[in-house]
Length: 364
Length: 189
Image (tube, rainbow over all chains, first blue to last red; front, side):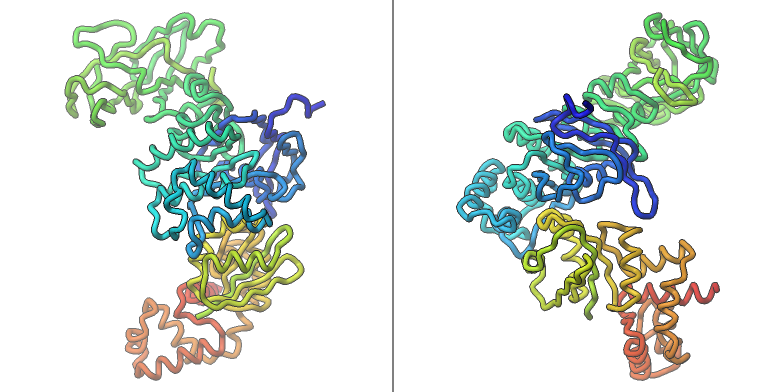
């Protein structure tokens, strides 16, 4: 019965324990629908690449079940899983031409030459690398090499594309460009893609759903906006968003929070009503939800602060200051100059605040 | 200088396909041997290491076969033992023998040290001292010869004697590192 209504790729209670007894993945459960673009995101060592390699068949699954297109794949060889993988290193065979690099995986599978030729030219057309087919990898730029690496995956006509940090080796400008190209590619191929990254910006911009991981455990699964607006715990709240959400240890009493320096904030009723907020609680607010107030503005949620550092990014400042005995960052439009050491007034947007239990770290 | 690239693989491996993969990345002479229990080795130049690092992942995908590699100076029991440890500690990676030795020391294991003891058993004090000084001088032969108050030719002769007796060419960084670790753990012991 458990197999009913499962996704196109379904991971059920997956554990990965290495021979040295190190457990890399704990009870991983996820149903991925056909044509979804799923992103696994988390810091180094969180188990995202291990999970991807288990889906690819390059790592054994210690416990649990993996289904791809309704077929149990635990014991299937990588070849029989019908998946294609793109790696971080955008590695290519240096002594083979672009054409040979793209054709190699198919040649090994004894595919007829005419079919290999058709697939390679089709992939080259999609990726706009037809004119480079005779070139060797060393004659290509980083971006072109990454396209060839994608081409090696496309020619397989696989059911599922697995991408392991494919943009990490590219420079910042190229990464932004390739990000949109991969999304377009995913849409044009109507593929099911599982993409691993440690870059939360990539996760937010590319994913139809994000899986946030930490220390081998899923922290939250949701659409980018769900995860951004309603983080399940302190880790997710701090990991997703740049700069990270501000956290302050505060005391809560009857709808009023008191910060460590005595500053108070009266909350909107809908924020705390029906919630069991403990007396000692962690208060969170994103930098973009702290706005600059006018000099004569007073009242609830308005604070006069001394700017320790104002980082100008062109269109906005990251303004650093101390409040509630904690370091706080606000994202403020660069309409008027803000100098280091100056006094400014900021206002907290009262409907955009978060609370976390200090013991369980779960969102309240 | 040649090295042994020992490997453990899972699944079915076709030797001809592996040869095709290697020819896509390495055009110099090499020797490939696949042993029936899922292991094998490639004997090739030190420059094969970079090529292998470059294609390790796509090679796994193309051959549908995950590989764990150990890079070693020899093809005996020491490497065989280290390869098994490598498969446990660094599965699906390419690891040098000195790294495995370091990990085994960290875990308080003695098997690899015992194997190395056997290699250095019959090597004379003067030859060991030459090798040690070479390492201490940052692998600078001229400096090491000066430090030992011997002619450069004498130094070369003794260093070659060390390499011939042990099989460990310490002009290679990883081999030097292995010898250095062995000497240091002996000093602590």
